[in-house]
Length: 336
View 1 (cartoon, rainbow, N blue to C red):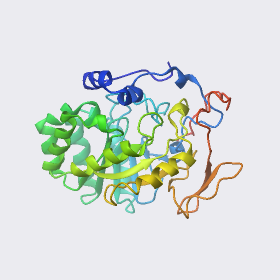
View 2 (view 1 turned 120 degrees about the vertical axis):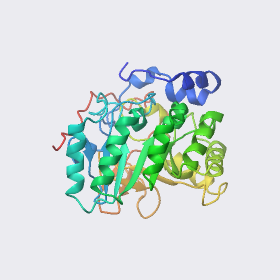
View 3 (view 1 turned 180 degrees about the vertical axis):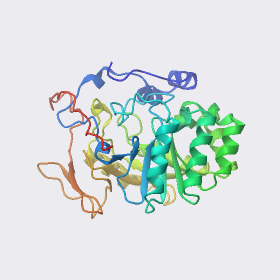
View 4 (view 1 turned 90 degrees about the horizontal axis):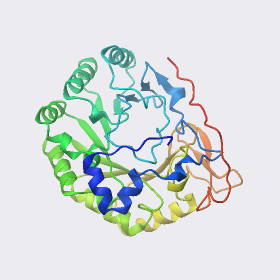
């Protein structure tokens, strides 16, 4: 098994009642098939890595891999073979390197804390990291990406953690929720608790074949999120991560789903449909003028800063149709 199965008791119980949740967290033998154009580092993060575990791809934003650990393993994860996957939480030396980098780069206006899942860190580790960031740049915007409200909502019953987050005003919690079945009573209570502590909430969803690739499923999810005070922020086309072809929806069908979705939800409930240029180059909204007409190489993508690339037009079942197997592709060399 290339990527070991891992779940919390909360998710274990949920997989028994929801086929969609089971598909996202249960191992599938199709993961062992790797297509020629799939990548170990599909977003090309390695080329932008600085100060150990920070990624500085966009001039005004710094992404920090605060840990490689997750409470559960999503089977479609684009970092499933990433360099930082085996890493534990940042230690004080690593945190110091990142704070020094932040101090020396005044153009950075946002820090994105990601992983792994940042909320697998202990509360004392959170306190050290957040205090360090605020002491270095007091007014910087914090974004924290997490799947924890779905995988282990009880994590946010820790009063010390909630007080700490509330004390660091201006933080955005970027949840990752893909299907209405994940909005259990416990998850809804968790989201309400975060809001009551003054945190802003937005959500990122991945379009997944056999999970949420139907208009009524996405419409139900996004409408429910808005009702819970969570802004649907991004809907992502699947990244070309190794072993995830069975999750990816052909881009032509994805565009048809999104176009129909616009007829069923309000602007408030409609996320931006986007994809990262395969191999690196940035996030591209999948709409004109950034998305061109498909050709032999696939769909041409142009990032607002000029980076270009292609996303393939895959058949519904690329593995069965012999798209090829490739050996593992090594991630890009990190820049120290």
